[in-house]
Image 1 (cartoon, helix red, strand yellow):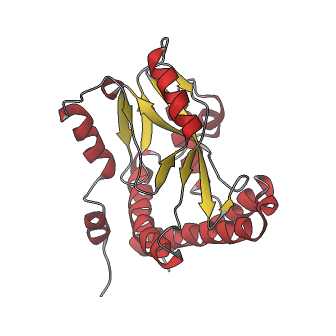
Image 2 (spheres, rainbow, N blue to C red):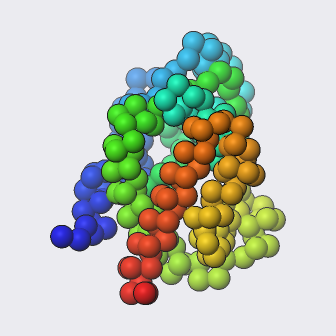
Length: 229
């Protein structure tokens, strides 16, 4: 039996960005600031202290990025992470999300950074669990790419580099990346050589391979959805 986009969507309760946006608009928060965490993430003591200081004196900032440390087993994937900073501390009325899966956080105002680390253990339930989840993620990513191509038929390299709005730059950058030939191999080279994942030892190599495989699943599912051989 073939799993459809709808099947994968059910795994995560539907459009993840839509659910988060609804929650931000309809929840009566007890405090003015929200710290968003996943079940496999842990706040370090240094981060806790930095967060308390940031919300005490935020200045004009409406949100803060936090540096996340991803682990494979006991190894911190210090280099092979594609993006180490995530927008997780924010004023709920000043944030919105976009994308079906792995939503992009968009703040309505200045964004700062806090010190300390948010520790992430994506393999805490084993590689099989990671692969199962990313099989579902890849279906939603493929759906997102197909729908984006209806809007961004011709992504602009100029806008990807020089658009004044960072959100617009990011959209065009992603659309250009999705059109690169041999994208899974490119993803591996970016993580392992460009980001110096080789310095993370065997864990860095394994993680880069897994990310390349994930990218390949997306490629295959986009091709399948468009009836391409």
